[in-house]
Length: 165
Image 1 (cartoon, helix red, strand yellow):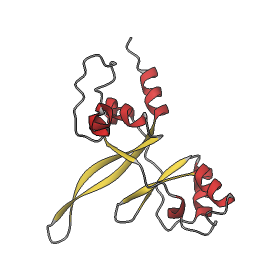
Image 2: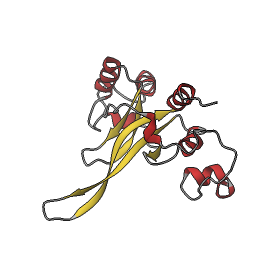
Image 3: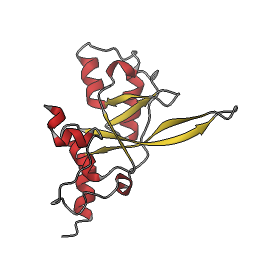
């Protein structure tokens, strides 16, 4: 059934959105949101340290990214606190124990319409940018860099500040 759902097909890149009656912002690129660089946590950060960092820096959530650049997921302040208080994690456990590993990624060149489809089901999307990297022997590979975290509030703020109606 999800394969005949246009929103699922658009979200997962199998279908370009061709419907005609879309809001003025639908085809604007995600990069226009002017997102702030995210706070990134490495997987070995403890739950205690993650809570301290998020509170000190004023963040609710942060991507967990391995040193290799692999995006492992998202940690939220509320989930970390809830997990520790419920006894499902210890303060000393690595933050990966409370990391959401189900998340959506969106590129800077993707449309706000695609982002809107993602945010209908997800609380956030991790904004990534692919970058070609070269090693000393001249071999190259694509690496995804976390560029930001976007929520429905970010999209709503952009639309309301730039409303062209």
